[in-house]
Structures are given as structure tokens and as C-alpha cells.
Image (cartoon, rainbow, N blue to C red; front, side, top):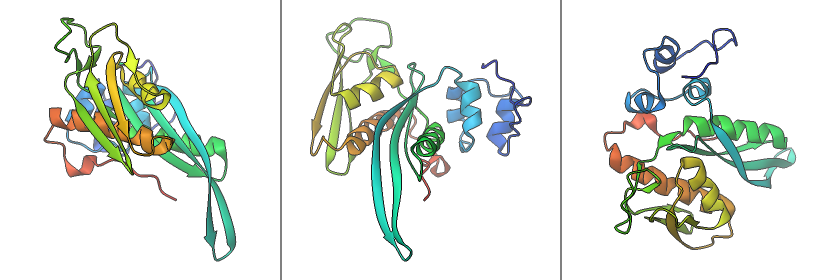
Length: 218
């Protein structure tokens, strides 16, 4: 468990899951995700995964016409993970780049999933969880990403965006295939996350509706 003291830092849990974490009843992220309780507090994730890393995958300016004129915002695509089986993904929008990044990081923590890892390749006899347990696919827009277990030592046969997401999830070896407009970073990253989420759901088919992915608000 994290050495952070959230009582001292001012975090006061407002959800049942948050109180269980603060009181020590739930001590790891896997138990929290399997509890069936909705994950709504980023501070909870900070406590259970103190070594969490974040990666800004894309920053883009978006414009929208309103009654008062043209409104410009920045859209940031972020992935967070502990490189040990847990990964989150989100997009954040704000008038300032820094605020958009922080917003995306907070939402990504609420979208945390656990990726089943192992050595799913028939060529591999390793007992170390370094790859995926089975083949999985994910889609976002026109982009489809397929992730395939690979033997230890191969590395990640993937584009930079896909590789960043897999590395944060703790996947060290995998073959990947992608189709569609893969130059669109946001869809490529989201499709990769969706593929990992599909693998996660196959492991935990009882996932409850209130664990639906958090969405960014305007």
C-alpha cells in the first residue's frame, strides 16, 4: 500500500469504495476492481497504485462554433499505468494544455482496468507474466487493433502509440496488427486500450454497469 496519508493531505472519501480503501479494508487495486463498487475517486487509485506513471499520447487543438463565436480548446490523450498489469486511458479537454492533461489523467485513473497477463504464445514456456494470455482485438472509429501473445524475447512489434500503451500495462512481448486510419493517434490509442479492456472483460464477465468507463465532460 502507498505510504501516502490521505487524511493528512485532505482527501476525504465520498464513496463506499473510498472509505473501504482509507480504512484499510481494501488494500490492492485488484480487490477494488473486483469489489463491484464504482471507481469514482482518483485519490483512491493514487493510494492503491503509488507507482503509477502517465504518458501524454497526443495533444490537439479543437475548435467549435458557439453563439458567442469560435471556441478553442485543447484535447489531450493520456494513458496511465503501473507497468504491472493495470492501465487506464482517457481524453481531456480544456482551454489550457496543462489543465487538459491533468483532467485527462484524473479521468484515466477512473478508467483503470486489470489486464490478464501470462505467456499465451505456444512458442513460449516461460512462467513469468510478460505477455497476453490470449489474442484480443479492439476498435475505435475506423481503427482496429489486434494484440497477439508473443514469446519472451521478441519485444513489442508495434507502432509507437500502441507500444506506449502496452508498456504502461506491463506487456513486454506481443505481436500487433492494426487496420484503418492508424495515423489518427486518438483512435489508435483508444483501440489498443479497448483491446486490453476486452481481454479484461473476458476474465471478469460479471462486470457491473456502474463500472462503465468514465467520460470526459465539456
